[in-house]
Length: 412
Image (tube, rainbow, N blue to C red; front, side, top):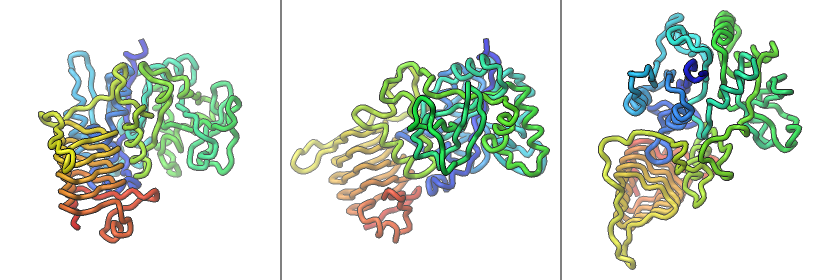
């Protein structure tokens, strides 16, 4: 019954500054991931698999490719009233864009008024995980509280970088933003409960909180920073422990997996999580599929040349997407996206190669992220000499990953 009265809101308006240059001309949720997916596909797949078919995606910065992807990929039949709809910032509450995540929802209350849901699920658009939100909604209804926050167990040493939840008997007593010192959980002192940025609200209570927040000139109009504390102060915020979420088809290895891909290093590591022999995050779970729409009519991936002692087109421990051609080159432990061409005697290792990139003959790409349309010329090298990469204007992360911007030509 509850599923028929739930509206899902996906917050997809962030700039993603820490993912530059991948967010130079696209919104963070539109960044390609895992070959032919985009980050937002994971959030939307969770919603649809949870049975929630009325979804709005609030967008703002550099949203064209994101809006286009959502519109073309996530089209729902209107016969049953289902939809996944991108909603750009519209300045409905005054001559300003979204001032924060709470203001984005406040400015979109016309949608809530149109749909009249009993409950609203609000999530971000750019984390990698699986979650059955229907279980969280059932928990929320059973608690009788107007607000529920999802918490995930994280090592206590990470507390200074997290929003830490202090709960007792299922009710949030305090919320600590990046505490220097934190107490571990009663049942596991090595862990703290951190906010995932996923919320369930009873509609009328959320609307009241949003309206009060909108009238407060001192507020930052943020869901985690203002709205949730508003409920916490009133003893009206519950917590849902992600460890209790049972997703069909999950294994002990990938159960409770969650990655915040807010930095280039985290983005790279999350991609690498996909391609181990026993993946930390398993995309082969047919009971809870991650869905997307491949662009155009893509042919199968092709591997050509089998001259063992001179050249051999092959890939090992890698994802190779449809439309890619490995033509006499070698690919190891890498993600290869659609329409990528790896020429003879080229070597690609520990890398993420996005759509329409070309790796020339005898070129070497190692521990790198190549954005769309990058051309690595014959004999060129990227990701080996990090100082040389920096001198060429490429971003090099703290862990030594070279990131080459969209459309770049890498010369010798």
